[in-house]
Length: 158
Ligand code: MG
Image (cartoon, rainbow, N blue to C red; front, side, top):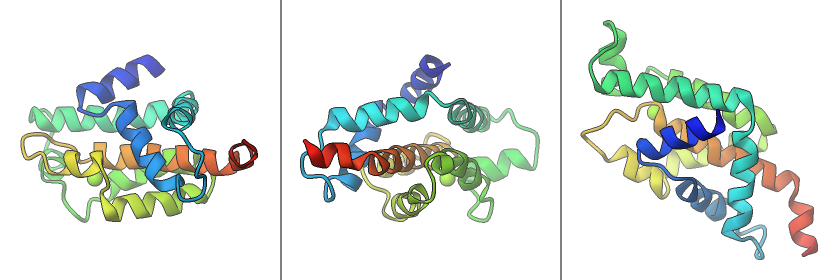
């Protein structure tokens, strides 16, 4: 299942390295010795969780179906337009963010606001429907950051 969601993310234009760069940007100020490999390892652990895999599968599938015009109305138009008041994309992403507690929530809010790195690329693509993808990727980066923060003493010891 982890391989399937990793491949799905790649097909939608997001690599694990893209997500690791977000984690690196968020956590580097606290851990000067942080490496991109450590960020990747934390993303890998988050991706092991079944609820994370299911959230990614659900959101990305809805994006893909909306992109092809295959959903019934009115949800087709709502998702295709990324209706600002819809909010379920954020709710689904919180299922990922919350896996490592409330630190994830702060990171998610920050990423949602600043649209760092790959998040801006996803958001600025007018051809694709990325209504869920941007929040899921932010959720993943936030959860990996929270996991890293909880294990931070390991990095400070190095
Ligand atoms: Mg969204």
